[in-house]
Length: 254
Image: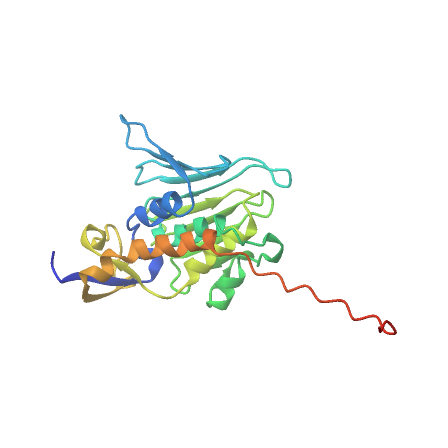
């Protein structure tokens, strides 16, 4: 095994192509207890949550929605879905699934999904429910009539989208906010090997910084992620304060 590997740090992150799907699927299975199934005759992957309410389905359709997550209805929420194109960076998808599986999540404190975009300098486009990235290649739309969200990365109007993400009207707000927060993040994404090719991308829009990293550091990145997510489920609950002793009753002396 070589001591170092060649990697590239790519910005903006929404043009860093998909990356390794294991960044999403392995932690769901090993850290969050999702069970997996597959069809031996078809290149598909299915992951279902421990309560069997959520199903993540992966189908290799480079020009379609490769990732589809559906959630069954609950007493306080109808069924919902989210889907992501094959070239959606896995780190941005992982922000969504990490929020979904967070045992400490509090839906009552959910932020507006547009807030992270505003703070990152995104601009309203056409109306206050559509935002565009500073480089103009990403658009985030909230459809007022249906309550659905559409996110698309488009290089120009003459070519199909690089990738799309879609959220049904009942998708929890905190999950969409986790997605838009990761989307608006300006830090680069690491890519190596075959993931370094950026087909159909205008390289003038992309900054690629080549570096050599210790091979061991790159190899353990996924394991570190699994351990960190598993720790969320094994962390002890906060200790309860010690009971206060009642004050001594006055006047009772021997």
